[in-house]
Length: 435
Image (tube, rainbow, N blue to C red; front, side, top):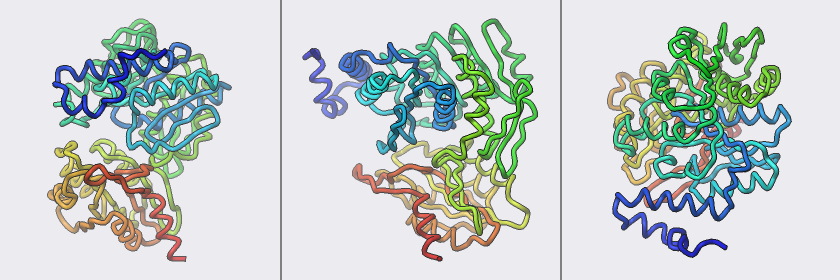
């Protein structure tokens, strides 16, 4: 029977968060995590749980890792900002929350266990860790994709953001997987683990961290093109259908997890080469007469990676038409002008538009993004009109890049309201009208 002591925690959530003193919030969040684990009978104890954290690439690595384990014949459950999946059943994540609340996570893990899944692969966020959503989950593996400034206002500084990410590694004693080319790697390698894997493209970075119980996975001869990306591992050539050097990193991360669980490279290769695209992540929505790409990039580092990749595949005569905005709700205001400057550096035409304003004035957010863009920039409040304008401006051979929302199904506006949304659907509808 569920203990009565937890009932106030479950049914007075909003009241508690509104009135409880700040120093007691941690106890509240941790209690709710314990309540969820108890209610669903600690399901993670009978699963191999893999937690994937970082600033960018988490959802892609979740998908890649799932495909590798499925290719090896295992039944897998996965949870990311894109979707939920338990075995053959999958459904879209419409929560507008990458990492669900404690009850939902524990319920998901119980469903995974009841479905006889062996692995559960979870996308773990810093905000989720801050609210103890990761507690009372037995993690076998912790993985770091990369780290750059994000959610700075929410955490009170980059160091606190980084510290939140590290808590996943401190909690996980089995296997750690880290990106050797990330400048924060040394910080995460300090956490003890039974086995550590490091991946990257720079062999010199491995030598800096060479130590016992550490296995490096370094890609040889990495290459990218307008057809995808390729690299070698132990003489085996991997040919990805995904664009961008960052997807080489994502693949290496997933391979490390596979190898740590005894999956061989040939199985990893077959699984990764079957992936034709990741929803809302460098997703090519239209190929002709011009290319339209939709991507989730909403941090400076992620946006620059997208722009660099697209710049590398466009020919000299074509234009890169970029549609971007920035999230509201007081989130990371510092990055708004930086996003605009990056667009000015890479794009031939720029349209700054609305993107999840929450309770902020969307026009003011647009002005903050555009404030340091020199030259011609269009400011269009209506995101649908902005996308339509970009498509109208595109000529054969051009590339339209729409960033910030990816495959998100909602736009968040004032008073907590959510509007159904899908950048990709709007692109397809506008193109159909031309036929």
